[in-house]
Amino acid sequence: MPEGHTLRRLAIDLDEAFAGRPVRVQSPTGRFAADAAHLDGSVLVGADAAGKHLFVEFPGERFIHIHLGLIGKFDLVTGAAQVPEPVGQVRLRIFTADGAGTPSGAAYADLRGATRCDLVGLARRDEVIASLGPDPLRPDSDPERAWRRISRSDRSIGDLLMDQSVLAGVGNVYRAEVLFRHRMHPLRPGRTLRRSQFMAIWDDLVVLMADGVRVNRIDTVRPEHTPEAMGREPRRDDHGGEVYVYRRTGQPCHVCGATVRTEALAGRNSFWCPRCQPTFRSRALQ
Image (tube, rainbow, N blue to C red; front, side, top):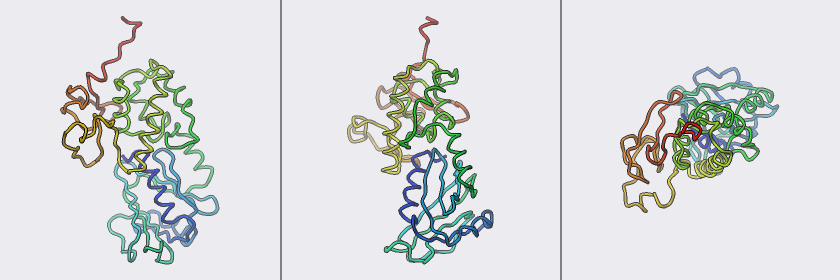
């Protein structure tokens, strides 16, 4: 499932391609046809992301609410000589109304495989955002909201970080990597964290996810652990990016050499280093 940085990057790219311009809105599969007809020919006001939710705004406080889910894709093409016929199950297509788009050519965006594509009003948009925890990519986010939930919970920190009502936008990659970077076992109960530990995790996510938006991939290793610094081969994975533990099961830890482990946690695979992230033991039980 795409993580929060992907949706923020997509919102930025949609803004650059379409904001302030009249656009055509169509639904080649017909699944969004009635709502597309209401929007067709309107000026696209702008796009915004909250966690893993995308909102494309049109006049009259109307928003296309999109959640990509596990397999959804919203592919944007700019600088095209022309807008081609849609390929595959395109639920939503947005393209420049005059066929010219930017001075460098036409622009179009095709949505496929999303779990949600609805036309909603301002009240529903606000309701969705209010249901989410603070998003490290939104400057108006209050991390204290997440800390209050985490500090009172018996659930594991690995579970809590993936709960979008606790913290929005964090997915399996950022969960695994930020816990490694802070030497924290994913099964440690949330209530055992100190506030300073959570704030260090939050501050790290703010930087890591902003970098993800900038380069459009997830890189989490520190300078001393890059392939160049360590003299190792770059990571070869369809997810891209240099990471410490995510999808590195059975491989040696870049820091200590121990074998990276994995097991299911809250329905997703969790990855950690048993030496760098030792099992938490409460002093009260010792």
